[in-house]
Image (cartoon, rainbow, N blue to C red):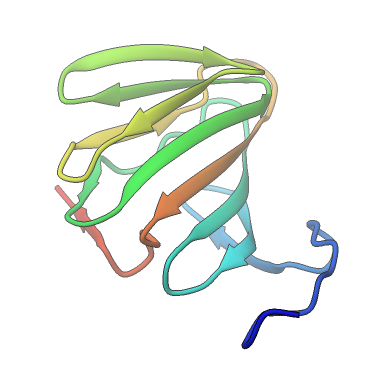
Length: 120
């Protein structure tokens, strides 16, 4: 085993750290360290987050189920299950669930975006 390596284990929503955000949205920290964050999130129908940006973190939103509407710097893109959207550091962005079903997606941030969020 590599020095200082974490033990190999399967992680899922059942054993990951859970948190609530926005209006009835859920998140689970699947990977949470100083270099990388992988979060699984669920947004109910019609939910929208506050427009914000990250100074350091780049993010990749990958839709597992449902769809997300991402607005970043005046451009809007719809991502359906099986597709993703990359948001670079400094881009003002806002994600919403425009559909009538919940959206489930991964947010991969490098470096982690928690603590690097600046709301408008």
